[in-house]
Amino acid sequence: MSDTQSGGGDRIEHHTAVTEAEVDALVRGICFKTGPPRTLGVELEWLVHELRQPQLPVTPERLEAAYTALRAVPLGSALTVEPGGQLELSSPPAASLMECMGTVSADLESVRAVLAEDGLGLVGIGHDPWHTPHRFLREPRYDAMETCLDRTGPAGRHMMCATASVQVCVDAGHDGSGVFGHRRRWWLAHQLGAVLVAAFANSPLAGREPTGWMSTRQLRWTQIGAGRAGAPPLGGDPRSAWARHVLDSPVMCVRRDHGPWVVPDGLTFRQWARSRSPRPPTRADLDYHLTTLFPPIRPRGHLELRMIDAQPGEDGWIVPLAVTAALFDDPEATEAAYRSVKPLAERTLDLPAPHNPLWTGAARRGLADPDVREAATACFAAALRALPRLGATREVTDAVAAYRDRYVVRGRCPADDLLDGVRSTNRSPSRPGPTTGGTPVARGRKDIRT
View 1 (cartoon, rainbow, N blue to C red):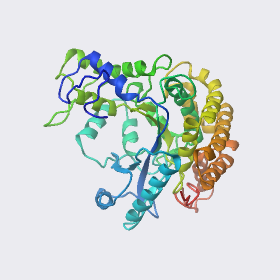
View 2: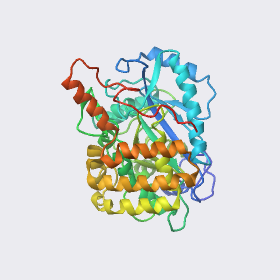
View 3: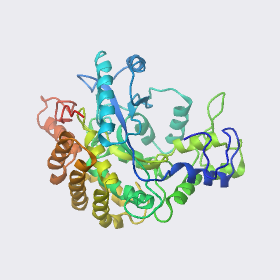
View 4: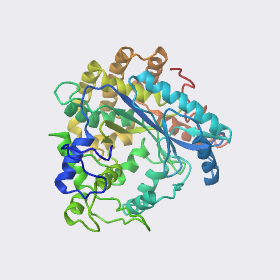
């Protein structure tokens, strides 16, 4: 978001204090950029572990050396580091699915080559199954985040340091009605999101033991609370609902130039704008506040879908990207997805995601739920029909079809493979436990050329 954008056309300087009414107008203007869907993006988070023995911890010194080397590598995607040392690649906006895949695939090849020189590799799994959360980055933002999230229990540290995801970014849609209208896309994202959680659940373990959830990563997000990681209520205008949510969500921190940042307890941005204490909030504070809210669908001009676990295999991320892109950017697939998930909506009990029965059931059971499996099967079928129209290669459509046959139609997800590995190990103690790569934990297609 540009520092000079505003909802009403008047420039508000970066350092200028903002009123409650100005915050409302700004959020409406900057978080939903409407127009016909034209671009696509993906953000991939990975755990970084020993290449051959991912159960072993990587020292902070080795991680720092690896990231120093990676920063010298020219990439088309932005490379960032998460609090626990996870690596994230964020693609630039792409004009097509294959353009997006091509950029990220090339970047991943370069990143893996650099990491491999130091015996490190990328692991695609939603929640670290081996290690306790340990913070790698020591920065004021994450000091404040840890202090804030610790108030609700240990889930915040797990979320910060032990999780990884595939986040798909799609355009918000246009202001009219129809399949690409922004109201309908907003609604669809919040219902389809539960199906994506279930279909791609890949984090059933923590501390080497089953947690009882197919997506422990989604569980952690739910546990940090609705104010920080919840969506606004659906219904009505998405801009108005999101603006209210932003104003009524708790402020994570009040930044300052010297010393630790202030971490208020229970102060909403609306209260801060009214009280103007400990100092008046500015446009920069609003921009920062928006980055501290983690709903499953986050409007950032576009829609950022944040609910998909990181996937096994070197290119397992391609399947959720392709399926999501098809269901949002092909009109026939979008309509089919809408019809498929509409019967599930009543199971939300009109509660916001992810704190409703539909979402928690998807995270706990995956595709073992017959209604969610039925919706997922229909959505995969619609995506497979749409992908050739979006210019997808045969390799991509074959990968989606293989995933559907291996998991979706059988009511399984990658988490089942991890659990099968644990059960097998428990039956045969001499066999190795869950690992990654070419083992039962993550056995995916090795290479899909774009």
